[in-house]
Length: 275
Figure 1 (cartoon, rainbow, N blue to C red):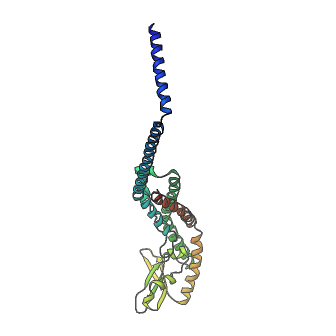
Figure 2 (figure 1 turned 30 degrees about the vertical axis):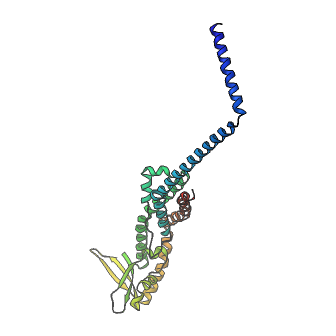
Figure 3 (figure 1 turned 180 degrees about the vertical axis):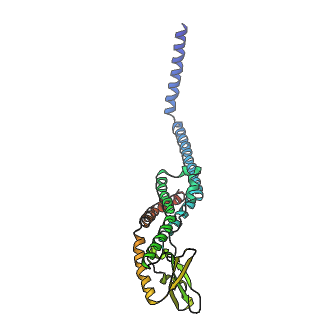
């Protein structure tokens, strides 16, 4: 036989042997045993792989709570607690330190894109709000002095409201925050000095002089009534300032959006514990 014929013959024999062996194996009880072993091993490896991956994800999630979501949640919550300013607290600077820390680090890339978007929007509002506080304090103070100068018919540098306890000295307060939030300074002074007994109230005007400021106290019932009229007019004037309208609008958006951001951040804290 030729070489080609020899090769064809060898292949035919090998093929026949393989077919015979396969035919015997398929009809053999060993097929079930081997199949069971292979399936069992595969399922065990698959289960082990999934369990390991779940453990890794949980470990990463817990680590992210400590480095990302826990500090961020506390910062958001603290900012929301400052969302209802009053004459006692005024407008307070909101915190951005934790978000800035996360943004400047690789941790930023662990934040899901959807959460990242709402956080970016929220903190842009916070930065805008913080930038307005200085303008608010400046423009409100200027508006009050300007209104007082017209109302009391003299060029003024400042105006304060004071409480004097029996046998004591005058305890003055600036009225800027009281005007901003429409809370009469008399009520505020009565609250903080309630333990000092009866209080006598007065208005303290500081007028401009060529070389210095001169302060005069007005304490008659007519003076106090006139101050009440001025206070109402000043509150209206300040409420209409563009900067006051703007800061209240932005604070409203921060409070509304902050609740959603807080809830989404809380979900990231809870997630590893459900794995």
